[in-house]
Length: 132
Image (cartoon, rainbow, N blue to C red; front, side, top):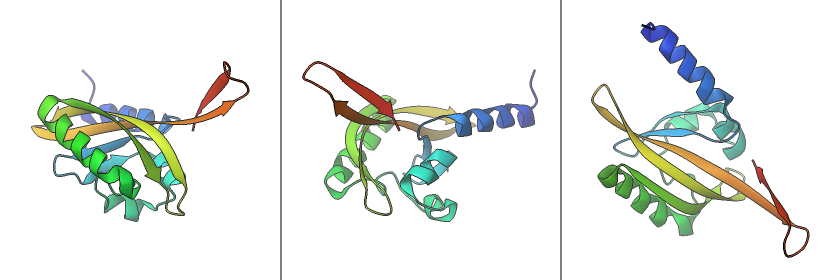
């Protein structure tokens, strides 16, 4: 059986090694954890990220969709939402975010993995997708 320390260290390495963004929210909507890539892409410091709630990084028109998806995930265990992330400098990033509930030591958390897509159309039938 793995020690708790080893288990946490492995999880941290995996979490921070992900090429995309990853977030873990508490049931009350407050951000509990995130990977370094989230800070880089969204342009917020660790201190600023630590004060955030689920809809803080979404464009104004997307905030209600994000809140509704958060509530849905708490009642059904999962949710998906297409929305626009907004960086600190105002860049708009379209994303498809998938969330699932995890219960750890009796506490409910929502794990969110946004998929950031950029499309370049070469002609009507060919395109590529770069995951940011």
